[in-house]
Length: 343
Image (cartoon, rainbow, N blue to C red; front, side):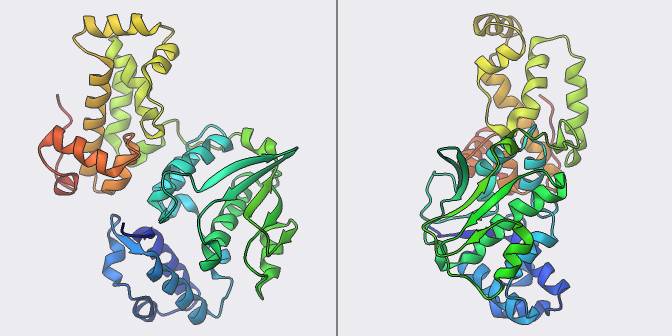
């Protein structure tokens, strides 16, 4: 196993933020053992120990021990990672949380967590808690405090005074900058607790997001918007199926039964209509994934791992195998190449 890692883009964002607070970029990189040029590659993964060193160097050089809290407060998630944009595309805050759980490995990959989702909702009587389940949290408490403060700050930025966090429990000892916790969370904060968790208002899950576009990923790929509009005017069953599938690819919720229901058809009726057009549901989905993957990689704006998740693969290695089947090439070999979506 390669161990815990952080995306190069997220590490770069932390470095940029520390520089904005007065730290020297070359000194930060040297103390963290990170080559600055490595952070320019969206596909790069930075070992967690180097990300820790970067955080420590930033704290020292900026004279800001609460750097993790301030990093989340001072940056917008959607500007740091495509995961932020995916979350913004949800219909409700609850749906956005589900997508964060699905995609969070693109930002931080935690060794020892396995397939278990890092952030989980837990009900205790009348209370609802959002837990951070990562192992050994006290080894690097900044990772949890950064995540929790990003939850709180992103909600405040998007929804102002909508009730969200009502209590904060943390496993690590009280730091010298605990007043920053009070300022950011505006809720009781308890340290030396048995778990890392936010007590949240259950009503928050149903709050509507301010969705910028029903197909937000079109901002990365103009062809996707064009394709969607073409499909909306298509009279074929295949076109109608693809119209529904495009905005759902990233969710992984691609069951034939669900699509048939959205079309107002039974599964058998959908099967027969696609067969009459010389198609099958699995073939339509597979071909749509192929075309969208080629477009995403050809746009030079998305990494291979981001593309894998956006076309519905929770495992990048499974995406690589599918891409090899589609094109005879690896996705990294095709990234940035001019892609065709015909066929």
